[in-house]
Image 1 (spheres, helix red, strand yellow):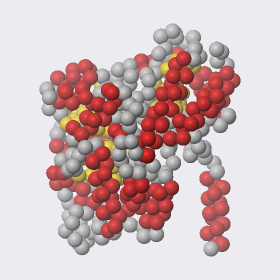
Image 2 (spheres, helix red, strand yellow):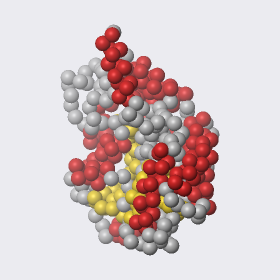
Image 3 (cartoon, helix red, strand yellow):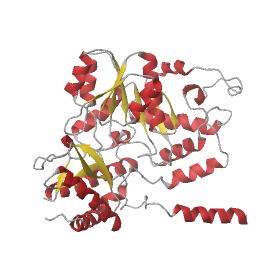
Image 4 (tube, helix red, strand yellow):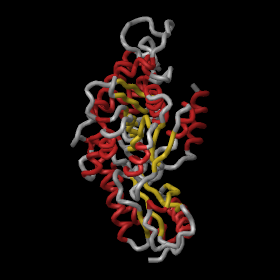
Amino acid sequence: MKAIEEVLHEVAERLKDNYPYGHPLYAGQMLKPPHDVARRAYELALKINPNNHALDGGRASSAMEKEAVGALARMVGWDTHLGHLCSGGTMANLEALWIAGQLHPGQTVLASTQAHYTHQRIAGVLGISFETIPVDARGRMDAPALERRLAAGGVGTVVATLGTTATGAVDPLTAILELRHRYDFRIHADAAYGGYFILADNLSEETKLAFAGMREAASIVIDPHKHGLQPYGCGCVIFHDPSVGHLYRHDSPYTYFTTSDLHLGEISLECSRPGAAAVALWATQRMFPLERGGAFALGLEAGRAAALDLYERLRRDGRFVTGAAPELDILIWAPRAQRVSDASNVSRRVFEEAAQRGLHLAMATLPLQLVDVQDMQRDHDTIVCLRSVLMKPEHRDWTDRIWSILDQATTAAGVKR
C-alpha cells in the first residue's frame, strides 16, 4: 500500500501541470467535465473491467450499451437503427465512411472545407476519393457549390457537419436533403460536436431545421464525451438501416460462443472496447433523459445563451471584428487593426494576456471570408482569431467575469477603444 501511495502522490504532482479545464474561466478547447454520475458509474464498472467486444466479456455492460445507443437513436427520431459506442469521433466517422465506401465503391466523398480534418485522413486510410466543397460567409457548406459538384457526377456520399469544430457552424442539411431528390448520394451527418443540440430550444429556426433533418441521414456520429458529460473516450456511430450490419460480418469462434444474441463486436471495426464507457453513459442518460426541456437540454441552452451574450458584447465593441453569430456555443473574433497580419499578432498577445489573468481561450486560423475584415488591409489570406467554447452550463453565469478579463487583456495587448 505504501508503494501505491507514493506513486499516486507522484501522479498527483505531475497532474498539476494542466490548465483548469473544469473551471468556467477555461473557455478554450472542447473540454467539458464529466458528470459525477458518469465518473462513479465508470469507476464501479472498472472493478469488473468488462470488454464490450463480446457478450462473454461484458454481459451487463453490453446490454447497457445497446440501451444507451438506442436512446441516442430515438433522440434523432430513429425507431430502428444499428450502432455502437467507440473511442471517439474519428473512429465513428471512419466506420461511417467505410460503410459508405462499401455501398458506393469507387465514388467520391464530399465534405466542406470547414469539416473536421479527420475525414480527409480517413478517406486516405480507406483509399476513398475525397473532395472539399467551399463554405459560405457563415462557415457552412455552400449549397450552390455542392450542387455544381453533384452535377458533375461520381459522388457517393456527402458529409454534413452539424457543428464544425472551428466555429460551430451547422451545414444546411435541409438544402442538402433537397439536392438528394435530384442526385443519388448518401448523407452522413457528422454531429460529433453538435448532435445533442437537437434538444435545445434556443437555436435559430434554420439551425433547428438542420438538426431535425438528421433523421433523414443514412448515418450519424455523436460524441458523448463532448456534450454528453462523459469521460474520454466515448463516441458513437449509428446507422439508420440495420441491414448494413452484414458488411461487418466475420467469424470468431473463440469469442462468440455462449449465446446467439448479437455481440457488439459483430457490428464494429474495433475489437476490445471498454464496457465502463457504456456503463457511464447509461447511468448519465438514466439521470438526465434526452428530452427537450429537461435538465440536460437546459444545460445546452445555457451554453448557447452565454455564447450569444458574449458575441453581442464583442459585436458592439469597436475594438473587435467578429464572425457570424454563433449557431451553437462556439464563437470567434479578432482585434480590429489596420492590417490583417497586425490583427493576427494582436490576437496572440490578447491570448497570452488573458491567460495571465486566468481566462483561457483558444486561437484559430481562419479564411478571411469568415470574419468581418472589410476595413482592414488584406495582406494575408487568413487571420488568427480568438476562439471561445462556452460549453459548460456555468458559463452563462460567468459571462460578466469573462468579459471583464477579456476587456483588461485587450487593453494590456495595446488595443485602444
